Image (cartoon, rainbow over all chains, first blue to last red; front, top):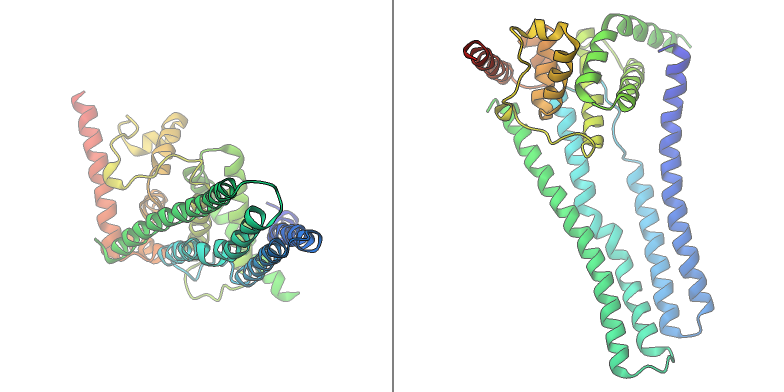
Amino acid sequence: MSMTDIHSRAGRFQSRIRTRNLTEYAAAALVIGMFGWMAFLIPVLVVKIGAALTALGAAYVAYMLHRKGGAGAALPDGAQPCADFHRRELLRQREALATVPRWYLAPFVPGMLVFVGGVSFVADTGMSLMARFFQFGSSTAIICGLFAGVAWLNARAVKQLDTEITALDAARRGE
Amino acid sequence: MTHQVDQDARYKEAAERFGPALQRLARASEANPDRRRDLLQDMHVALWRSFALFDGRCQLSTWVYRVAHNTAARHIGRESRHNKAQLSLEDISHLPDRRSVAAALEESDGLDRLSTWIRRLKIPDRQVLTLYLEDLPAAEIADITGLSPGAVATRISRLKAQLAKDFQEQTHA
């Protein structure tokens, strides 16, 4: 590669990281805007609170993304032997996956539950009590199911990474 | 400005000396030609960027191979869903049916099969094997990978045992 190509590609690499971060912030802004608007527009107090909590949850996730974005992947440098670099990469991925339920999913739970509860029980929809319970139960089950599914997939990936880290440590010991 | 001139000069020297080795590593790391080209370019950029930090603490070859292999390892981790499942050295049972690895490497179909076989290895084994095929001594492989010299020697001897087993099977066939 020519030096011009090298410099150009190195610059594009930084742009890609910035673009990825901006995309995530834009998604958070969309969620905040949407639920913030609902909190403003919808007359039912409980639903307003649920929408506001969801928007706050999205704001918290955006803040955590910003904080974690600063501690991104290290550049591959020649000072680090391959086994050390690989282990650090595996640990970084493991940490990210293991904490997703706590800082990426959990912030949305209170707002979603209050929102769905408000829509099901407080809003004047003319539905019977049984139908309201069914609506709340099924909506909550879908939300919890989705979040639980994501958490389960993450936990499985964490377990696979743990196995890889253990095998790598054994290799470093000469086993 | 002087700093960048030094960085560029070091990169040019390394690219000229180790360019073919980087190409072989990219081939052994990525099956898809387009992604292989991206990986090779990423290796070169990573190498150039790394020379901003190079302070002569190790040999140039050690530095270059570390950067290249670390870049490849990150790529493999990211692309693992596109490539086939990785196996440990113990699970490898098929090798190119040539009289010698050198003969296999001279022929493109043998090289393709060897590369395919290497890509199925887990990262530490893959790194040791590709460095071994670059004719590096075990001590330098240990320095690059961070494995103990004993661990490198064990892995290399298991690889040789697998090769010997394959040759014996070919002889009896």
